[in-house]
Image (tube, rainbow, N blue to C red):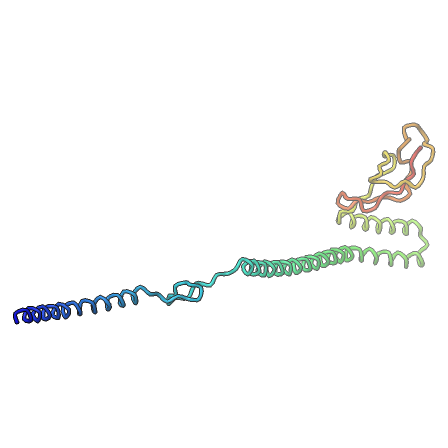
Length: 208
């Protein structure tokens, strides 16, 4: 009988021990599940961690180059348009300036044309040759002074050394003397400067 009592006591103790250990094992399972849940992170298809923020959009080098080319093209077209407008405006102003200068010169010459017309009337009605010559000389002087005021100056060629930059040789004749060889011995058509620039070459005969 005592033996059975000891066995019962042992069973009671074992049962109490198992009851004490059961809560510990349950707590370990809960803690392990909580740890796994806290360590698990949602991933995308590529295996990258999914965060709540969207990744910044990156511009490819090709798109950046296309954008830069479009900006440069727009800048070039604007500059080209500005240059064309400037060129047309400058050409127009130049034409207007030339036209204005020509108009001013013609206004100065018109009174001389009037003098020539009066001289023609005098040729028909007057028989005094000296008076007619004097009138023509006065008109010539007036015209010459008007041209000089505009910068026109006659070229002195006779007796000067032939210069292809100033003269146009139309013939060669034996020089009257040795010192006239290679020089202008006669002037067929006078040359003229405009502000020291040749506007008409002198047609000359050169001594050979």
